[in-house]
Image 1: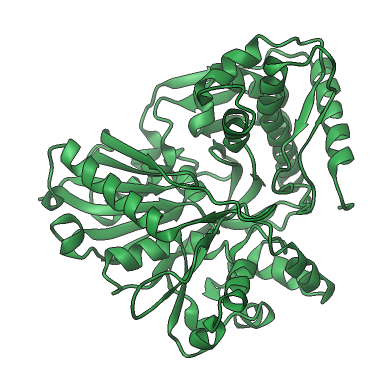
Image 2: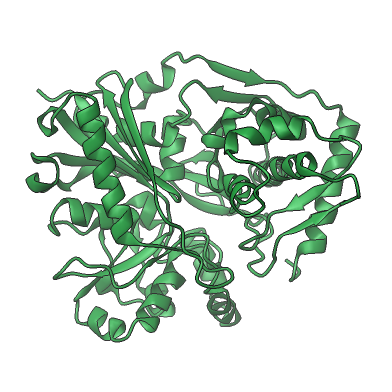
Length: 498
């Protein structure tokens, strides 16, 4: 019997394939970056064909590197950058242009126009979301209007919409399946997270024909079987979750009150709220954490649009570092007497501010400011934004902030300096697992669950795992002063009052 799982982690800047054995031990990993397109200020796009090619290449290389064949793989698990939106021709399978990335802000005006109609309360109640360009629904409407003939073809049932998971499944199955999972569906502004169905009223409000939408399945389900021509043999696709929800699973946050934060291109903090769909009073979003065996578990989420992407900016635009791994050591050597703040609103600000028109700024520059201080400001910006999200979550859930233990993952968490500063800012312990690829781990666990490798969450959640724990070193007064300085910088950056 096949006893390996192939996890596809399709992220914002790269695609990765990791093979796990039946004990969820990673066997091999292959990663490949792909092109980022910025055709206008605030616009971010990807080439779907390049994403597809990178995924297939990584998967084939990982299988070969492990000395396996497709016959050894019991199932595929997929985790993906959420909200990134594309449409394709149902007959040819070819995308109708580039995908609009979750960071893209081109539909800010459309969101504002919808807000003026008074539908946002209905949107919040049914989807848990705010009207913001971040989510997929307005991106989809924009594509249907901007691509000549797309809306007419959509009405005739000739066009399919999907987030990246749906597109990959369509391609892997040779066009046999147009499906998604509940977590990705919950990020579209079109899906009622309380009833678990596409919402006709919301589709009508956003001018989206329901004929373009995929079927919605549980996170562990039979999503289809890969065409044998792709990998040399048919492999069942058995687990799908958006990257942040997959990280909730990979971090074993199965109990209400457990919190995880993933630091990749962006930063995403989720707190498990169990069977209760909490309506935020602090501009967080309610979302589906996962759906297993027809049972939905909910979460509150706060999103930071620029986390690791700020480090990429230091590297690629300012060229003050050559590799991302340098930034922690550079920040450690900065002049701590300089209170410098970077507000990384390159594509607007996410929760809890939700200002699509805000743009990046640096405050506190002096003649002594150099590379080290800019590096520190970039990393501290991520920490301060996390403070905002955790504070909002505790206000919504009524928990004592002192009880927070934050489980972290993602590329930025490899920096000990950044994790120590995060603990200092939060005034709370940080737990970093030994394996930072928890999004892929979550996808692998879902596929293994459906494949019968293991049962429900209990045994996975209780597995002992070594890692690193960081304890806060700042005193209360220093923390208070620095957080107040951060908030002053943010308010100077905001374009509209929220």
